[in-house]
Length: 451
Image (cartoon, rainbow, N blue to C red; front, side, top):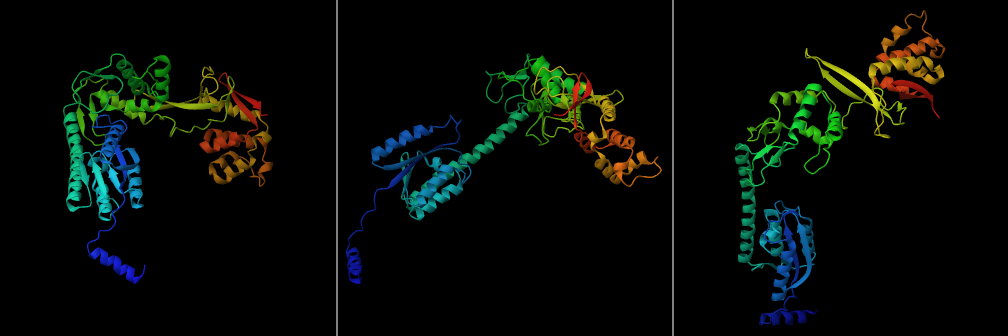
């Protein structure tokens, strides 16, 4: 445009001519509720959409897109759809927002500040809610901030009130949330003070489960097998109890009539429910749980697992530890090897004590050829590394410089020493060198040629 045309256009404005009006506002309808399970809000998402579309049609508003979101607005920048809406406004895809109420847009200072900044910059020309209209005027923005701040205040007060209510509830003897298996709730009582009474069907079994761990040192896996197969114990939903929940149950002090709230806070309360077990039994169980391996994570690795196969069904051989507390206060440890039953759940192969297993391995070592042991280099390394092996060869007048020329009896003696006195890694390394396969059949270890 030339200088003359520019001057003429400016002169026209100075003489009272108005600039061309902006185009129609393109609105995005944004609807939100806190969670998918929140059925207590005034309007569901689809109800909000329906009401605001009717208002838009009545007022002749141009709604170009609808955004739906089920997410809390308590924290800023955490709502994916709202964040996408803000970015689209910055790229001028929309100039207006349509929402049921201001608190649908923001319940925190961060998101509210973003909206007001966009209004200051001209990115948002108008925000409409049910019965309200907010433009880029000081009074409208002030009112918008007041309404959203009120929503934040209500949100903050709700959190304080909930904590105060929970504190009062636990002090009265009512622990929040569902009571564990073995208890039932009075569904007809007032919310927050529902009476908890003992479940006559499950409580005796749970008491017996604690006794088996406390007095007989049962493991969690033993207890689960007993609950699943012998007692046919089922949860409130009719399912078998998971192994992790077995350990959760055994660690729950609620069964003693006392509970800690919140967990690990050190604040204990006397419940209004009856105890299923004594505090003494609960303490014994907690002590034994530290001696008994839990679950699969962190499960103990035994010396001879995954080295043999079951002769009855062909599955692997695993081990489990049993702890027995003697009357004098000492603890006796037993390790039993048995079929994993991964091939046949009904496999009847007998258990074998670790002491008996080692005795049979010592005999097997004498039966295999020295070439099958393939442990010459291993034993040489052990002799150089561990001084205790020198006691085995000390009877020899001269220690051979070439270990391959060592008499047969010394190689076998070293192999037996490793089985009896070696570390777990040394034992496993020795047996993994065998070219024959060892099968557990009828409580006996049998050699079978591989391949």
